[in-house]
Length: 110
Length: 111
Image (tube, rainbow over all chains, first blue to last red; front, side, top):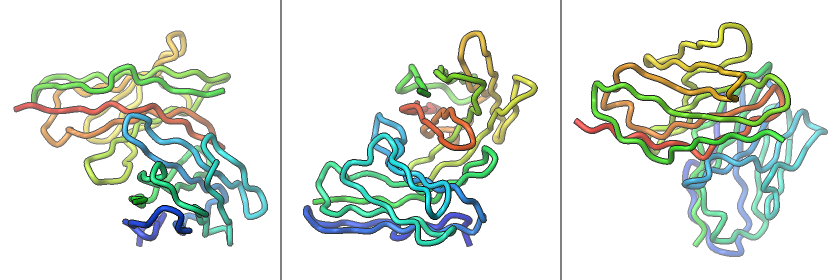
């Protein structure tokens, strides 16, 4: 099994729908992250969490929320999806400077 | 604030030729520096990283990078590219707590 698992791998949803992207990890790391990737913009940080009770906004948190259900689980929600949230989303964990990324979730909002 | 600039959006190189990808960063202290590669439709793979010590870092797939503090740069090099090196490359800077990425450089390899 992968160290960082993201589900679903691909999702198409309609504008206005609520959607949750899930991430689980077996690394035992406290720190977890959600990034989105857009062509020409690289990866931008949405939210990050240093432990279950510590959640922080990244540079592009508007329109997103997160939940850290346990050390191993960190979910990203789009309460009301809009087309410009179409992107590739990555979850990551870190410990002592070592970052591990999931395989990504490709989200399309139509 | 930390930031990363990859000046080249797209580079085309012939197979067997050398490759250099540029990365400049802004950071308040000595950063952790990374290079990742993303093949089409794939996730991110770590090529190499620099935390401290020797400023010339060797990575996987024959890549190396050199940290130059005076130039705030961490350029990636490969002496002889293979067709399989066609991908998008991302430079990242950060620390234990946060990582910032450049916009990426797409590498095309021609036969």
